[in-house]
Amino acid sequence: QVQLVESGGGLVQAGGSLRLSCAISGIIDSINVMAWHRQAPGKERELVAAISSGGHTHYTDSVKGRFTISRDNAVNTTYLQMDNLKPEDTAVYFCATMEGGIIDSWGQGIQVTVSS
Image 1 (spheres, rainbow, N blue to C red):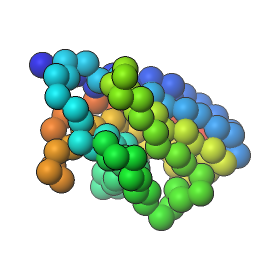
Image 2 (tube, rainbow, N blue to C red):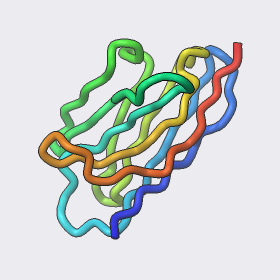
Image 3 (cartoon, rainbow, N blue to C red):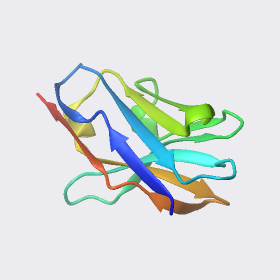
Image 4 (cartoon, rainbow, N blue to C red):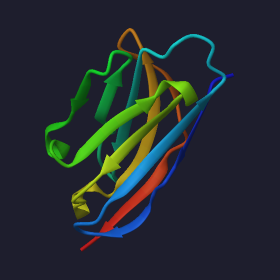
C-alpha cells in the first residue's frame, strides 16, 4: 500500500514563502515522476510542478520563477519550495506519483492560504 503524506502548508502573507514536503512510503521500485497539483475552490485541479527520476522539471506558467520542485530519492520525498506567494496560489495542494503519464497515487492534500 503506497501512501503519500504532505506537510508544510499553512497561512502566509503575500510575498512570503512556504515549503511543502511529501513523504512517500511503501515504495519498492524507483518512482518515475513526482508531482504537485493544486485545486482552488470552484476550479479544476491543475498540475503545478513535476520532476522526473532524471531531474527534469516542469512548471505551469503561473508559478515559473517562483516555485521549485525537488526530490530526495534516498528518503522518497519530494519538496515544493514556494516563494513570492500570491493570493491566487491559495488552494489545496496534492502530492502525486506518476508512471507512464498517469497518476499512480495521491496524497490527501494540504491547505495553502495566501492572504493579501
